Image 1: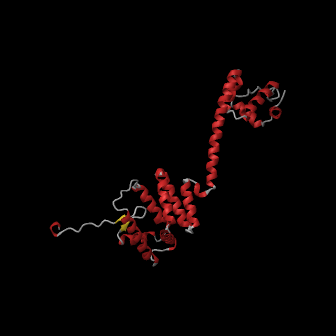
Image 2: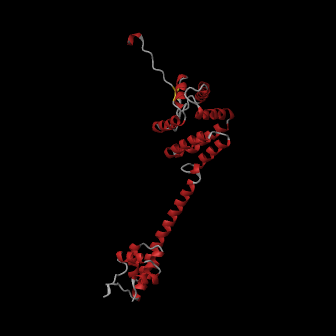
Image 3: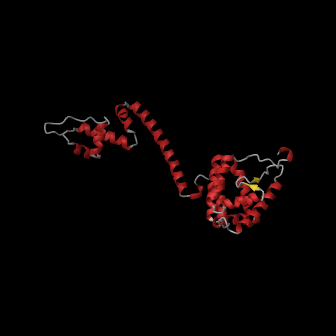
Length: 264
């Protein structure tokens, strides 16, 4: 007869594991002998080895008792079911591994491939990393809310990026990361931005936006711009002085009508 330590050694498990199987009701716990020890026979070793083999194969302990009591046909069916579950878990874990790998890939996390290519191109062209990060984070927000529009918008953004004059303006906007609200470069930059907006508005006159961005998303993107650059608030004020309001969705500032004398 074996002590619990000897039983564990025969089966290749720890004493703690044997006690755990006792607690789960998988392995009967014998009564103590006259010396106060629990003694185990060969049948307990065989049963413990069977339990350990099933557990090592990935069978949940909740189903081990079922398999131990099953006949051949029931055992095969149960093993097939467990195999299907394990394969599903493997696929899920592989998916998790792929997601974890993306964490090491930086920009590819939560971004469509075309946006990753766009921010990579920004770096190639010498854009400041702070501006690249803001652009990246903005597109994470856009892709989460309007994924179907990312492709068409990215095509337009890539074309703008390859336009030398527009790229120069965009690079200079990136200098906002160094601009305080009193920086003398801001009014000049505001003039250039306003001129570009005016030209874009003239070219799009009469064309309706088929996929407008929601007001909530616009507000979120504008807030990210303001939080990121010290001179952002002053730039928005300068643009308003030039007749434009907003940043993500820049639009012509409406002027309240002056009441006539009869209305006073």
